[in-house]
Image 1 (cartoon, one colour):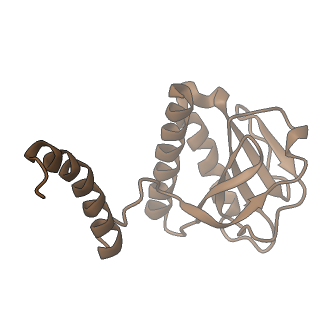
Image 2 (cartoon, rainbow, N blue to C red):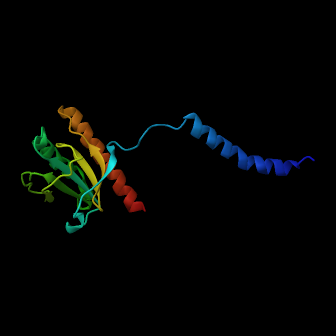
Image 3 (cartoon, one colour):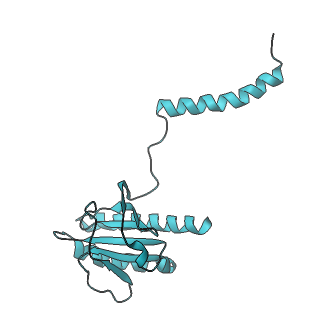
Length: 167
């Protein structure tokens, strides 16, 4: 018995996409490109007692523990990064994990005495409003390379803030 042409066409329209999806999945055709500039955390790091601080959608945290190469430079660059946020300044908070950094005039920041052991000294981290560390941005000793890292952080942060506004 032969199936009518419309029924064959109908079945083909459903089976062809499924077969194509399975072929792409198992053949490795999927692109390996990421849209984020920072490195996603490989393990879940959540900051305890995060709810005691004033709420903020996102926090940029500097880990300032000993020994730290470049922490002072990261702190100065972080102040410039905060200014570059422009109208989004009120949606982003700055935090220092570990030893207190010098107080900045126009940048509200919080200080947390203890940094989790999984976080690297001198690196910047993007933390969500629940206290979950999401992205890591390593310190680069060369000024130009570090500037590119900060531009990437700014790009990721603006993307996240736009996504939060649209949802």
